[in-house]
Length: 311
Image (cartoon, rainbow, N blue to C red):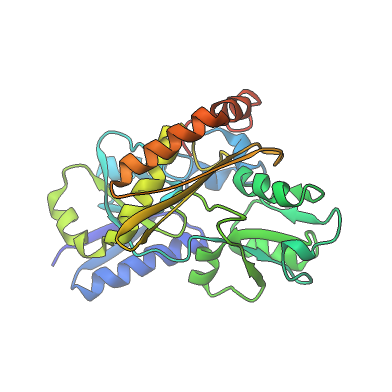
């Protein structure tokens, strides 16, 4: 069978994801090598992501290795991939999705509603911040960077009363001890693509695409394609206060989406059913823009909070 070289970031979660895909490929008889690549996002650890403003900050160096032929495929958290890939690349597979929701982690408190007035909560996501502020405007939101272990360690050390993380990463790493609440999508709409892995290859690499075909999950591809179409229509990256959550219900796609002011003062919500993932995502995105999402996003970009159009 084929010899396949996988490119991945070096974080604990990224390596789990790469090893997971490696194991599935080896089961098919492939020989697999892993190449660890440091990205811009890995190098900048002391600034909130929303203020960095670098397009493709977790993908650029990996794509360069793909283009140069140093690797054959890249394993990404799908939410890190720009909604419009650079020319010369394609997503060969989107894997079956882990739980896409966000979770509330704390040593002392059972959930968002149990936090005392003015409690210190850690997150570097404007999307999470905005939705938290919408339900609890009194909370003191502070930036939280670093890998999963670093974030959990800061929580254990008492730097925060609670932190918000993606369920998928904690489930994959088996670090679920401090999860106190899985936050419903009605309270905190997830990021587009959250919980899914995207396997990126060089465009037109038919042989590698064929090898990866078995990894592609139809439901995950439909739902994340819909979410990414919405994100693309809104011109937003993963650090803009936009949430999108699609799932297949009775053979149709159901999409929930939000655009929010970072301070939580305004949260626009829209939900709709459809059969065409791209059409559904774009139409819901257009509705949100017309309802005032354009003004919210223009203000966010204007403040320099989230400069890039893409992650």
